[in-house]
Image (cartoon, rainbow, N blue to C red; front, side, top):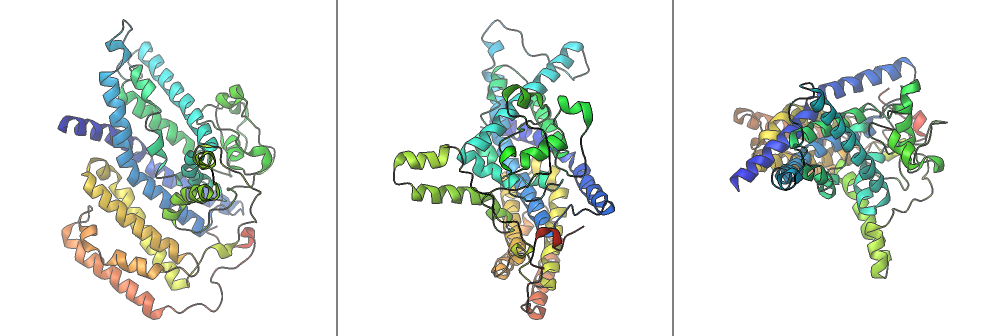
Length: 431
């Protein structure tokens, strides 16, 4: 058992490190996109939406440590014990780096293409099977499209998908090759989530681009369930799901996922399935609610700024300060999370979920966020168990309690909504 655990942990650590290396680039591009939009006079980011985006990203990275242990651990076990070349007279997959020989280069390119092919079908299934859509709608629930939305990923999607790459393991593809190709595939897709890059000309015939991916995020009738590609758009062209961008899409899902709480955003789709099962009297109807295609409805009304901004200015400042502290702690701990005991990772996940619930509540009207934030401040053992030096735990908790007390004493219910109510184009935003 000890050997298997070490094997899984090593596989998970590699998968986390591939994406961890790209995090500084991701955050830099978010800043550059914001500046580019500001220079062009375009609203690119909306404050509370971006908080939800990054909050979902924090949760998915933490939960992803557990899922990487499961998925890559299973992959490595199958590759080492059930690969075809161990039982049949077929050659083993070439080993070595991608530049060591032409055979190795061809093998790496083949694996990358196979991973991308699998990504296409997983992505397509995630739009056509309700239980998978319950996970994937987290990514589509934003009514914006920017680089922060690229980080708005489900924490639970991998629970259902860990078996998908196992055929590659049976084919004998080494787990390190798969992990690197998968990480590069996911990293490439980050660059697709922007409105500030137009058409890229001839490369759009082969590669997925921001223009193609904007179509995928549209909820317009002509754009629904189109352009599922990860890196190569040729899969959509081959299987009849390609559509060219002819106008700016309307982003988001219908009905809208309400609220700014990243935890609830991850659970909303499953609650919708639960409600649908409750409305279905027959077993067939209940199974259809889980495994059938998701029911698309008429587009919801335009998003209004009144959907966010629950407290006054001091509440907002406090909530954003807590969020930024958690974001910095998460980014700084990503590499350590890949090597940490799973108990520490779980403790960090609970802390993050409570903090993000409090932050999300502060951005929503009439939400009991103070009770949640108070619980976060009163769990020093949780903070102590997660990478914070022991001599800093007491000052950190004391500072949190002092800040919370200041908010409780000084904050007064606003006489009118602290965020203007009206169409999104006229709302208070980062840009």
